[in-house]
Amino acid sequence: MSNPTETSPTTQSGHPLLWSIVALLLLILIAVAGYKYRQMTLDTLIATAPLDPSCMLDTRQCSAALPDGRTASFAITPQPIVATTPLQLSLQLEGIEARGVEVHFRGETMNMGLNQFILTPQGAGRFGTEAILPVCVRNSMVWIADVIVATPQGRIAFPFRFESVRP
Image (tube, rainbow, N blue to C red; front, side, top):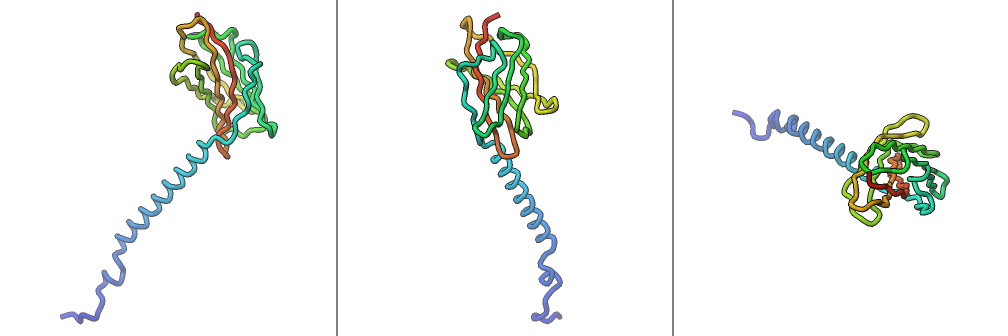
């Protein structure tokens, strides 16, 4: 018969398997919280450049600058911009470390649905992709192209205006 004052091996070790599972779950919880915090930080809009209403992308390349001098120059070709026609989007960044670039097109006065395109890096701060705009019931449509640049500090928005015409 065992002495009631003696401790069993299970009590001395404190259930090592249970503690290992708890430690693993705690590490997973910390990793998920860190990932969510990082995503939240990257999704935060930290700056928006002012829209230059005098520059229209359907006539020429436009540039937008932040007060600290960081700039984005954006172009859409061919011009004029015709809906349902393949368009080339070109972006040149100066003074910005970009982790990714997206363009969100939205109608200035009419909801035209979700029109987002991811630009691919082409080296030396250049990004580009091909896009197609939906056709509008009107003969022409004024759009805002929000160029969203993901940086290590957060996201920066550069808005640009242009007009598209029906084919």
